[in-house]
Image (cartoon, rainbow, N blue to C red; front, top):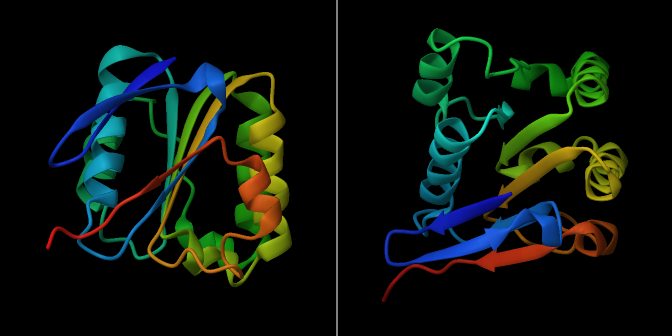
Length: 166
């Protein structure tokens, strides 16, 4: 599957057959969410993939999730707050096992990885090694080594580093 990575300034194309995990990094205001929204729109328009959107702050994708809920069964709803307990992991694990075509967006990865570092490393590795059509976009404004660990980096197929224009 090819996706156009569209930022505010330019556009490029990424072929997910070259790897299925993208890491977006950059400070607040650099365009990470803009790219994520662009990817979501494209996935909805050009494919029959289901979506999981994990937005712990419950701000960035609230409107998008409401639209998706109205549009049918394309959104697999996993309450972000569940990730503070084991139930979220169990539901995510069940959905990943049951979906052949799946696109997962995690906004502000650092908020979750601080609580569940091993679980997220394992999750990313499973997606990276999956033979199913499952893709993952991880976004963080904190690409520190304790957030984006060596194990995470090893399973990321593309890193897009964004900056704020000066």
